[in-house]
Image (cartoon, rainbow, N blue to C red; front, side):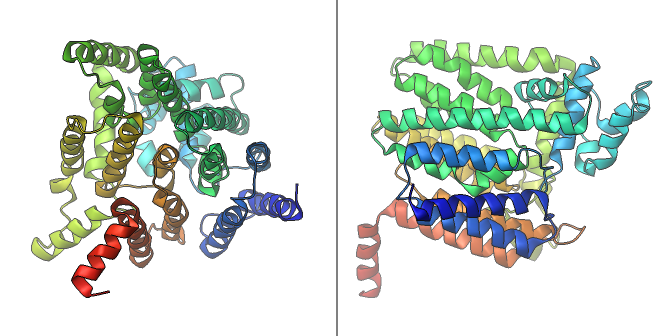
Length: 443
């Protein structure tokens, strides 16, 4: 191991330590400096690092954060709440925390429930759980050994680190099969966004990607029926993969395709309907609907539409345009799905990646950890702009400089201008851009 790598290793250990244990979310300037330093240092060593070093460094950086409380998100209080509620034999989709702490006898008097309720956000306390059943099982598993916030936090973090290590090995296997350099896994496993948002802030996108990546791997090994099981589990962990899985299970024969679709949605039926309960499905649906009708954060195209709405209507048109995201996503998915041009696996993965990217562009809420999904999926395509996005999306934390969330639209504009620029450059290709500029501007 060369001197540069040793310096990189110890510098990042120090930066992650300060990030996780010293500074808080409102200290934006310091957090930005630390995060972008991590990213810049990783970029500098990215071409000089072996797979074994990527694995060793990645595990080490995650372990530095092992005992840290999440400092950029308070969602983990709701995770622990849901896990403990299941332990009380109560369905987390049946009551909101505000209803439960008042209505269920004895629950509000238990110290841990009162502490969790006092620390979770208003959004979490007033709404039913938006987390699918497999995610709920992980919450329950993390809280079943000891009724303690810190112990539950450590248990969740252990599960997340294990899932990320699995993502490393699964990702390397997929890259090898697709004839990409296995070292590309660096941009997932050593990416500061992944380390901070998954291990640091306890988001479960990594677990969803473990199931999803395993499904892709089984598909590549021509075990397509077996692949349906981990793919269904990925949807049961986080819903986002349901919009891209149809690309994988599409077959040439319509009858065979229908059987596979029936099996897949049958699996989803058991994953969702049995734990949630038919009577509680409206609760789950209404909570998910919030992300399409009431909430907004770090939008791109949506913010442009909202601005026009203010100009034309004079008020926020969020409730009027909320249906656009799922509608457009469905239309684009169907058009890509039934396009029969070039059905090679690399093309299929690119279609999945592009659909997911378009979905994020038209969404009203894009938190930093959301894009970890396309960061991982993008490893198996020719695209790299998502890596740039994984650095720039951290700028959205400027919204938390005070107790009131106030987004900085100049920084959001910078984020998307750069991302769009890199995307257009990669999508059209360098030569096409040069030809266009010569024709239009005589360059």
